[in-house]
Length: 356
Image (cartoon, rainbow, N blue to C red):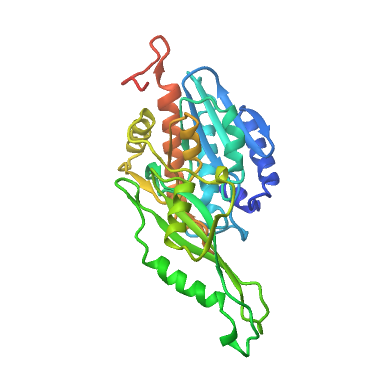
């Protein structure tokens, strides 16, 4: 399954083919599938509790096809997030013929790598007791992460002929000074989520080689922590860099929020499933942002868990360990059984403990 998923190129905004492929697989598993654009929301069973499993269909560019070397599968999206999709689908296949005491809901969304448009589009149609967003965590249970926003920072200069540099003011040189200053900034720190981070990820200057540039702009990826939000981050940077033009690079609604879920039944349930699969549970937070924040914000307690590592995601040789992929599928299978199958129908309780 994973090989076939990676074989289909699905760079963000080009998810149609993989959406149709996954829709067919879910229907083969007797799930009721509803499309919202190229987003898929599928359900099996009825009633409460409702367990939601979510993954994203899109990848970052550039696409490169799958190949297997030993116990590693290489290819764009192998770790982020098609390994997770394959693990979820495999777990559903193992349990789809069982009688469910509740509802298994799956949300496979688009655009996670850009603006989380997919999650925003399906959330109004999600009524779940709790959920798991599948992302590459090396099978760690993630109960919190930082928020993410992007900024544009511009330095201004004065244009002149490049042969007479003293007549102008080089905006690129001004940006170099600003970047050096950014390296020394002390950023806020959260006791659980850690320190905020700021990364210059792009730079442009629109002038000819023989012209002193009068403008230079960098793009900044900023990971922030509570109680900050996009506007407090913007205000703080503007006060520390008064000579630069600083603005949000997009509508704040598109930015990922931070979240932290210190305790909840879904954490305990997933921890037990990890243990039952012979693994040592790790509960921690992460720096990367995910759609889990949006589900938590919408009232669906959600954690992050999945095969593959964030260190492999978005790389030129992205890969996933196939043994870890099999473990993830086993954990999801156990979680489905724990929440929706292994219950006494007369009491609504799991056979060995109550979970709600």
